[in-house]
Length: 410
Length: 119
Image 1 (cartoon, chains in turn orange, purple):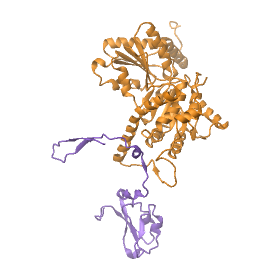
Image 2 (cartoon, rainbow over the protein chains, first blue to last red):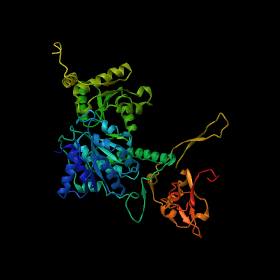
Image 3 (cartoon, each protein chain N blue to C red):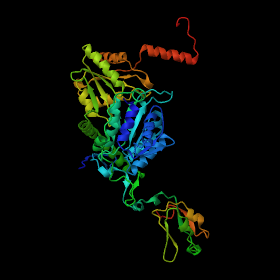
Image 4 (tube, rainbow over the protein chains, first blue to last red):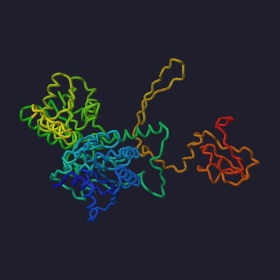
């Protein structure tokens, strides 16, 4: 039985990274603590470097990769944001770093609970993003991420995401593969170009100054990311062949004859699957789609999964103030060019911010509201909660502001 | 193989038309990594294009061939002719004027770019 953090630490250790720059932040600290314990006990041969901030962590990771060393690190929310400028440099210099992100709602106001704003907010940074539902998937995804990132038709860094607290500190049964099996699956990283060799001098991360050569490199970066769509599929298949666990970029659950689909990602999916089972027991033709690969965006998989459905209910555990959820427009855009009769009505529901629980009742509501929207022919976008949770919010706000209740409210 | 679609655009004022292409390229593999592996190619970038003022020899007679200009140039743009007088590489001189500042006899002076017809 391993926590999500432990599972990631094992996945990282098994991948034999040569360098681990680290900095603590709740809720990921257990990852780097576990790795430092492995090193102290002589189980992991790596250069473990405690840095002064996450910005320095990623700078160190980039330079380590540029010498040809496989590198791992982990962060969360504020730490991820602190590295923000370096994220673009890591992907622009084509460093195949693998970084675990343990998602946590962004300050301000401060929370420790999970939501997707931290990692989805980095969607334009040019990294590959894999989102995990289970601790097993987290361990497996770290190993797969190296194989994907280091592929010479990709050479892009990856983030492996798990929910803070919900998955990071929850114990689940995890099969830890043997080092030998992982070595067979994941060979040593030996880059052709980006390495430190005094006999072959090389300038890295050079300035292009003008827009013409800059545009070329950005375009190639995009092509590499597009290559990653099929490389991810290929590696997932190879992983299944080697370890017997199958992962799909867009997981389909009870979708065979579904008319409606819930769309979720990360650990809340487990709750959503219960909601789908309950709906099925009631005779409703509902299924679930889980987004595992978010960048590069699996457009074809989304289209194939959604075409012909009557409605899709997208859960956004994130919010872009002034616009709404982040996932909703990505899905709608992918489905826009479908012919009208095979294009589903897509509804967006914002819920679960900052670790707020998303209950079975809320999933039931999402399904029924989407059915109504489908029959009305118009999609909706709503922020939802249970009344109990909302009442509690109002009560806490009154306490914070010293507002006395009137006799009627008592 | 790269294949580009081209369209000629018409122009209202009979200006030269620009061909517009859609960029459709293959992934270039190793070439797509922004690194320089060919040593010594920085000489091809003409950093002298950035200059506002250039150092110029006002009077050869004033120059005492002390070589201080060469010592102080941060871009290694000063070399010497067979008689020992400074030769400035205007392709790479950025016009920082440190040499002018250090020239004790005031042989080197600052000239505004483009004034004397030099470019």
